[in-house]
Length: 369
Ligand SMILES: [Mg+2]
Image (cartoon, rainbow, N blue to C red; front, side, top):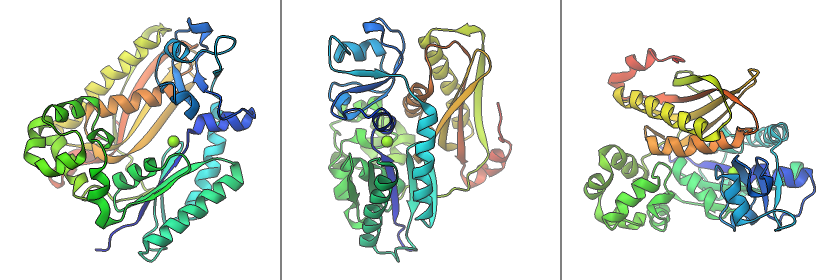
């Protein structure tokens, strides 16, 4: 079996970049997209922000009051605070995805600003041609909609995804199959999708800070630190044995839960707490069935029944509650208009994978609530 050549494309600070273009803003001025900060008294959250704002430690899903404390807006400080404009993001995303899908043998949109491409056949197995293709795609996206994109190339989804982070913004980074161990070794454990802050801390307590430490210590010590489930996932990634499949044909099967509040909820914390609660329940169900998932989706319904949802594909199929919570809270922050009252919250995992002896069980989980 020939190695696959996968590309991961990730638009740079996407929402902020679209707002910057649309309003003709200075990219060096910190831009925070989210709720009205109300001079530091606002009770909402940060949806996302540009690189200049990230320099101040501002992050998606952070309370907007905390963002204001770190970098206030006029007249106290230089930051610009904007409400998000999702219609613009969808439009820009569609144009980028059209360009990417036209140039890839296999294409999978992973989220509003990310996609995986499998270019093995069209590049004739030639990694340098894949790198040339990335450069071309970068130029096409810039010429068409003036957006900056980063690309990672690697033999697995995780490698390609981590490679796209390596030279952000506007970079291209290539990880050859033979260079996989060297590439991973230079990263902290925390950089692996599926190793969150808690898992990284448990590894750290055994002296495994970097992935080079993980290679040296081997799978047994990792199992002691984070349990066999996570250890197996991590070890497969390190060995280059994790998923290399890029597919637009998605499984329609999913497991989800949603909850309608008894009264419309104005407090963002209540909404986030309910989301965490739903994730705990869904993860428990996944684990009982020995199923993993590669797609997560959050759903929000406002008073008046307008419903928004936001989904993303993961680099690895998993059943890790901590990771689901981290990703889902960011997805929620991206779409949540915190000035509005919320009626319903939902969480769903899809693209389910089960070991062969569990396939029959999987078949019974079509769109279950
Ligand atoms: Mg991005």
